[in-house]
Length: 219
Image (cartoon, rainbow, N blue to C red; front, side):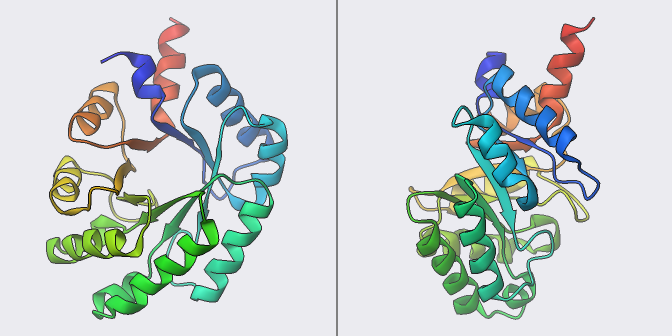
């Protein structure tokens, strides 16, 4: 698989609590150089990044991050604010407690409400697979499909585990035809990235792929 092909599906990501604008700016520079799918950054830097990138690379940000248990009204406000600041893509975290309590309509309606706010902008739904049973993962495939979101996404990268090949395979067997898949968290090698893509992942949430490419270039 061509390296450019892998880079083109990477949401080049920096979401750590200590992130500074200079670090985010570096992510943006990398994204422009290597033609990644987007930059995925904290909401507080969206406007600066959107102005800096000037349409060259889409800006993605996170909503209800990382725990997902914000109120729906809060997530709606966050989403509207992010879009107003220039975000093109929204990655929301579901309310995991509501899912585990089998309050499926709550989870579905929240996703539907955020998709309504997003309109034509891409909405990715983070389900935090490491905290879910297989039954819950399958249920979320159904809910994300029914709610009309654009992507189902494995992980925040801030919990007990990240993307696994088994989870992407499971998604591929249960999502609707209009839903894409994003593997995120712990993607640490070119080989991992290729495998996720071979299994059908349409996006990869990672900063390591660009770091690997840069390291190889400096040798």
